[in-house]
Length: 448
Ligand SMILES: Cc1ncc(COP(=O)(O)O)c(C=O)c1O
Image 1 (cartoon, helix red, strand yellow):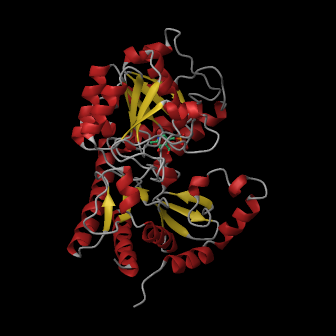
Image 2: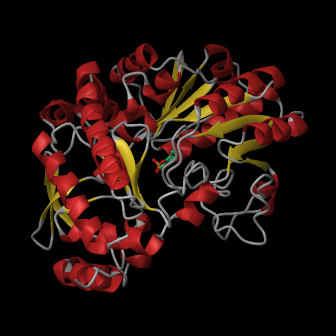
Image 3: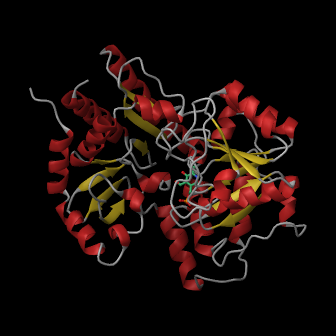
C-alpha cells in the first residue's frame, strides 16, 4: 500500500480546515500573518476555534478535536471547568480592574509557597516572558553581575535578554556541540544581548562545569527548563541538574528553573520530582487557570532585592484580580489525586507507544519523563537518541513529524504542530486509548 506522504496529509488538512484557511487570508489584511500568535501556525495556517468544552475544542470548520495543545499546556483543567467558571462568574460583578491590590493575590501566593519547594515569596506579572525577564533582573541585582547562562535550545519567552539560541538551526555560526555560540532568535535584538549570554549544552556535565567556572566572575544566573518544550523536547538528566545546583551555589550564581510548562509535572512542580531546589522559579501557563498570569518566586533572601529598593518591577495588570482568582480555582482543583490521574494517563501513552515501537524496531518515540506534557518524534533511525537540542534537530525526521501532526488534526486530535502534547483533567481513559490507537495507525500509515 502507498505510504502516507506529507503532501497527502497537507491536502487533507487544507480541505478539512478550509474555513480557518479563509479566515487567515482575511486576517492578513489587518494583522501580520493573520493572527497575533504565529506559533499556532499548523502547517499552512492556524486552526480557528469556535468554542471549547471539557477536553475538546470545536473549530470554525465544524470539527470537534480532542485538545492536546491546551493553549501550549495552560489548560490543565481543559475548557470551561466549573471551578474556574464559577469563580470568575462570582468575581466579575464586583469589578474587573483595580490598581489597588485585592485579597486573592496573597491567597494564590500562599498556594504556590505551600507547594513549590523553592518558593518563599512570589511576585506576579501577566506572562512568563515578563517573569523570566524579572528573574534575570533580580539575579543581576542580587549578584551585581550581568551575564546569563542558558542552554542552547532553552526557551524563556520573547524578551530581548532571553531570545537567544532558543532554537537555532545548527550551522557555521552556532559553534560546536561542546562550545555552542549564542545567536539572536529574531531581528531587532541588540548585539549586547547576544554578548551577555553564555551557552551550555544540555546534559553535558563536564562542559557545563568548564564553562561555568570560566565565566563565574561575570555570571548573574543560570536559567534552565528541566524539560524543554519550544526548543525541542529534551529532558535534563538528574546528575546534570544536581551539578548545576552544586556549581551555582559554589560560584555565587543564581540558579533559576523556568517551570512555566513543567509546573504541571507534579503537585510540587518538576523540581519536586528531581528533588533539587533552585534559588528562583518562573511560573506561568497553568497558574492563571486560563487567564494571563506569570510569576517569579524564590528564596526570601534573593527576592529581598524587590523590597530593599534595589529592583523595581511594575506592570498595570500585574496580579490582576481575575487572573489570580482563576489561578486559585485551578491550583486548588489540581490536588495530588489530580496529578496522579494525569501522570498515570501520560505514563500509559509513554510506555504503550514506546514498547509498541521498540517491538517493531521502529524509529517513532514518545519523549518525556512521564508527566502530562510529552513529545512525539520520528527519529531518523531506531538507535538515535535525543539528549540535546542538537540531537533533536539532527536526529528527528521533521517531514514525517509534520505529517504525523497534520494527520492527527485530520483524524480528530489537536497537538502542538512540532510534536508536543499535554493532557487535561477531563480526558477519559477512552480518550487516551483512542489517541494511542490513532497514533499507532498514523505511524503505520506513514511507515518507518
Ligand atoms: C519554558 C517557557 N518559558 C517562558 C515562556 C513564555 O511564556 P509566555 O508566552 O506566557 O510569555 C514559555 C512559553 O511557551 C515557556 O514555554
